[in-house]
Amino acid sequence: MPPEASARPRITQAEVATLPDGRWITRWTFGAPGGVTAEVLSLGARLEALHAPDRDGHRSNVVLGGDRVAELLGGAAYFGATVGRYANRVAHGTLPLDGAVHRLATQDTGHTLHGGPDGYATRLWEGTPVRQDRRVGVRLRLHSPDGDQGFPGALTAQVTYLLDAAGELTIDYRAVTDAPTVVNLTNHAYFNLAGEGSGTVLDHLLRVDAAGYLPVDDDLIPRSPVEPVVGTPFDLRETRAIADRLTDRHPQLDLAGGGYDHNWVLDGTGLRTVAVLTDPASGRRLEIRTTEPGLQVYTGNLFDGAVTGRSGRPYRAHAGIALETQHFPDSPNHPEYPSTVLRPGEEYRSTTVYRFTAGR
Image (cartoon, rainbow, N blue to C red; front, top):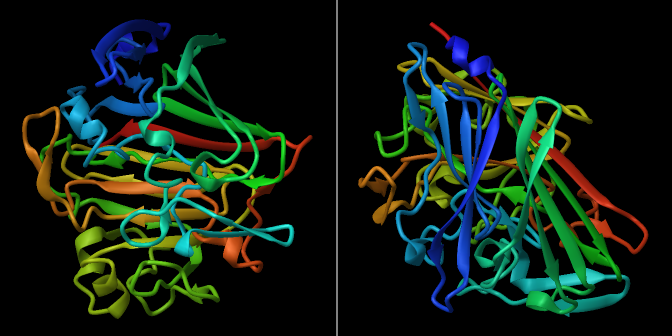
């Protein structure tokens, strides 16, 4: 890492674009000069860009993102966003809770994805710069009223991004409610450690510390129970090239459009390392630690060039990989999965850490 990367991180703030209704979108840029720097938007509490040095100190943006506001409200709505109130899928928009069944807003699939068609990814969050020891970042808040997209209870959600000079980005989530509800928040960044718009991630190396995964049905809704990864292309307990695994013939890969769109059931509990992604060409390495029990891995199988990134290049199949730390998809309809219920007087808390390094 260049010597200047050890300098004290700094943060700047600017209004960068307007929504169709005239409201301004704010961008916070923070990090240490010469090291890892992040850009976060108030629209969707979104990680818009993350610049990281390679083994020779050359910096590139390693997360995908739309180039225009229209894309961030459309085809790129989830790129880098904080998604909720319930990340991933809730089957048929059916939420059973305490003897009642709540009907959630659904997408064209007939299921609820990432909180519904007007989820948190397209909302303006209120942000405040944060300086903490040798870390700097931004804290964003959103109030979600009772009945928002059909979810019961008024929820106040908060996400804090903090980056230190060593290239460690911590994302901390908190939420409280005034009535029983469910909460499952995550960040939906797509990573390409060779640089956004540089091609596919098929040559990246991936390790996921999980002995089990959740198979899905035709609508990508998980089935019970958890199945072992051994003997399947979902066995990533040893580091493997993504391409090596995706060339395996397996019906689950076909259901997801020729790749992964599945939840791994992570080993261990507490804040621990659960996955490592490496780009051999640049030497960039991303280590992920989390308190969450699951990791949704999506290899951008259905990218079709409709979204153009900040590089000016369209994103096609496998242009990035999402590594979403979260509770399991459709948990409200699977009592055997870890609970996502939040009640008044409780606080939802979740932490994920992205650590970037570069080596030979």
